[in-house]
Amino acid sequence: MIEKSDVRAAAARIAGHVRRTPVLESDAFGVPLWLKLEQTQHTGSFKARGAFNRLLAAAEDGALPPSGVVTASGGNAGLGVAYAASKLDVPARVFLPRTAPEVKVAKLRALGADVRPVGEKYADAQEAALKDAADTGALLCHAYDQPEVCAGQGTIGLELLEQTGGAFDTALIVVGGGGLMAGVATALDGEAKVVAVEPERCPTLHTALAQGEPSTVPVSGVAADSLGASRVGEIAFDVARRAGVGSVLVSDEAIVEARRALWDRHRLVAEHGTAAALAALVSGAYRPAAGERVAIVVCGANTDPSDLVRP
Figure (cartoon, rainbow, N blue to C red):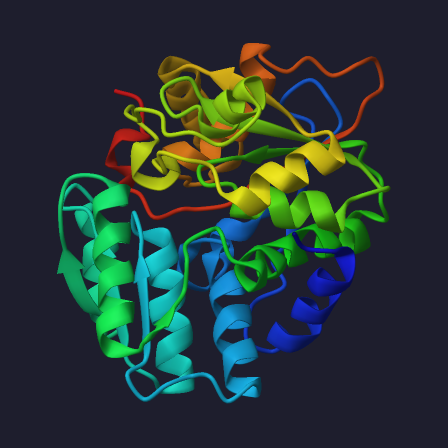
């Protein structure tokens, strides 16, 4: 479990290492809406926040070993870890599925990471990363289920409150493993409601809430490269129950259309996983009450933009 004090501590720790990303007020989708442009973060996603908090906290405790850091990732978490490691001058090994998009693999190598493709799913990469950490003594940086990682992601929520003056009622947050949701829901506790949004074909939190505990689910679809964890994290599940976070599901078709709408209306390039949050709004999977004000984290842009322009 994490507390708001952990998120505040993370904000102080990572200040100067990550960008304070802008907020765009939008009138293009029928409701008062703020878009937190986290795709402008270092490496193109929010993951640098949690990675820096994990590595810097370990360094403070003298627990950042010479063997460096190891992580498993669909791409974005690995990029965050590789970037943080490069800035702190420690080696990084990143295990990822062979299905990871080439745009992310190329960026990982450009950051100097030791890239280890393995298996076809995130779970395969995670198993390999756990073994590597045990064998080498490297610091394991989990993609979404460590307190420091979740607290680092939660700094987005603190920024949203400051940048909007707390003017929103609800934040729509995409969930794969749930680290972003766990951090933001903790940061916004008592300030705004958080609603989780998941692809119909990657329903980790939705299934866990229905069954009363995290369980493994099959994952596929257009957003699987970034939201393809097959099991929601224990921290995210605990935070969701504590904060009363519900989950709505969106179709691949709605995600594709929302991604294109971000481009058409605001010229924002976003991953399919990012667009899932907006898909909930524009498809009607989440229907705000009259006068309800909504914030969305546009949390990643590591995608091939060639299919955004309509023929």
